[in-house]
Amino acid sequence: MLSTKESFISLGSGGKGVGLWIDEELFYGSSNRCETFNNDILAHSSDFKLIDLEVWSPVLKKSDKVKQTNATDFFGTTYTYKPPPRRFNAFVSADTATTTTIVSPTDSLVHYVGRFDKGQSDQYYGFSWSGCQIIVNITGTTQIGVVLNSQLPNWFDIYIDGSLYYRPFNVSAAPPQQQQIALVDNLDSSKTYVISISKRTEAEFGEVRFYGFSVDPTYSLNRYNPPTTRKFEFIGDSIATGYGDMGKSPCSFTESTENVDLSFAAVITNELLGEMNMAAWQGKGVIKNYGSSTPTSTETLPDLYPFILPLSDNSSYWNPTEFVPDVLVVNLGANDYTDPPYPTQQQFESTFISFIKVILAGYYPSQPKLFFICGVMIGDPVTCTYTENVANVFNATYIDMPNIQDSSSDFGCDGHPTVSAHAHMAAIAIPIIKQKFTH
Image (tube, rainbow, N blue to C red; front, side):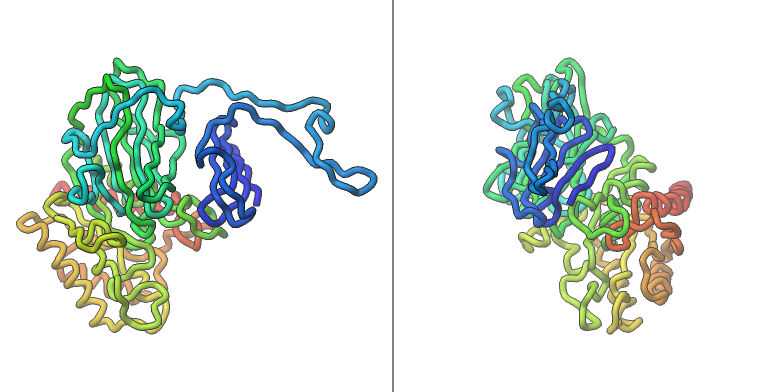
């Protein structure tokens, strides 16, 4: 019910999030409906700034009756905290913001990484898959916010000039509502900043719609140039999405514990100065999904791969020429052999081979360097044997990763790899991938 750490205090959990969350400086808070208290949101909006904070405590009288008493009675003084001014405000309500204008999602200087549906509307762009990023290279503004909505709560990281901002944000307003979230204020309008938001959560949580950035009317955009032209695509399941990597076992998965930006895929991409496109989904397999009572399933990863918005619109086909990778990394198959009945070797390998052929055909005549990873959270060793067989068909590089989770600190929510385990995975893969770049 109560969780306290150096970086925050939180009360209540379950449902759509934490009942009450307050940051380490007692400056920002957030509130959501939660199962613990069955409460409503405790402020005018889910995210808010603290103006005053008073501490109260129950006291047990001799009569054994409990009453609530002011901290003055309990401690001899009233603890009233008034937070200091701060340079960056992650959440500022729209009614307190100064006059702003909207940078349209259709502006050619807004840079997109990942799968975006740009054809639904001229008012917004839709996206679902993990790791989708929206980037602007901006000057002439003292503030920047973003306007979004989401089918289900989705979490995002903020980056300023390539550095991770101190806290993430989540989007809970469902269409047709729009949620305006202040990202950074008190910027120096004479300076240029590269500001990006990155979707931490996976496609299971539905479509997010981007309506634009809110900035000062005096803003100016410059073209964003990535550090290199390298492009990486990752295809996988919950391991690639960073499922549960923010937690420590024992814990149950919630969307706030998933962070693809700290997954092995993101670490590899960042270390090699590239951009990442991901098609991964927890519980999905090559031919059988997790928990299936039959040896084959529908809506496997190969079934969902062609779509930009796999939950909301199956007419939104992805055009692979929009992101042609230099490196294609496949980490898929663990869910196929978690529980019986299992698919046969022939079923698994032939489906896997057909899937990879379809992907590579979309990039022809380009030929990305192909890697297969296996070994993490594998229930049956035949998974890796069969995966290596598939890798050999394509003359691809097979990377074996046994014993990644070799200490308690490597287990996150539902037994998935933590951030440290993901770093271990990346450390194994990076030199192998780098070697292929030089040959």
